[in-house]
Amino acid sequence: MLTKNEKEKYMRLAIEQAHIAKSYGEVPIGCVIVHEGEVIGQGYNRRETDRETSAHAEMMAILEANHLLGNWRLENCQLFVTLEPCTMCAGAIVLARIPEVYFAASDSKSGMGGSIFNLMNVKELNHQTAVESGILEEECSILLKDFFKALRQKKK
Image (tube, rainbow, N blue to C red; front, side, top):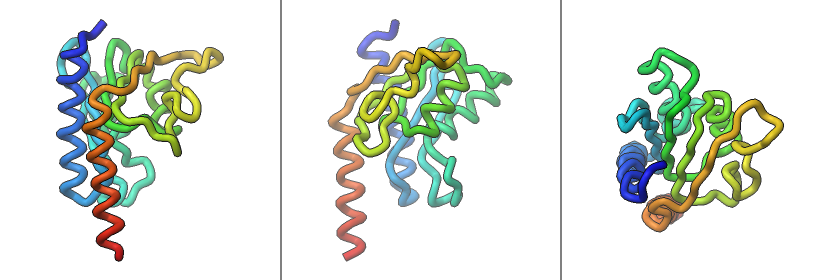
């Protein structure tokens, strides 16, 4: 069980990734994956840059962690992400067998960690993931709101 300080430490690393995304004009979402206290995967939203539907922060971090561990299974790992995972990312988390997910801001339009549905905790699936929300939520929510506010102003 991670302490509050550990959760915030890793979420701050995810926030650093979100700032990288923002610097490229991407939606500021960041993710890190931790295994035995070490970051083994990190990623940020790259959909516009890569022009790929699947280039979400979680997907980038999962790919990096897979390569580092040399395994598609990410058992005994924790995933930290600044925004609640979408359907695709929640599905990948389940398929990767990640046991714990921590997210900051909820997503009322596409969140699959409990806002719309908790895809990561469907008992009929072969793997369930424990989900905790709200870690540094205000900071991440402000980052996203400010990004979209600036984007709307730029379009005017």
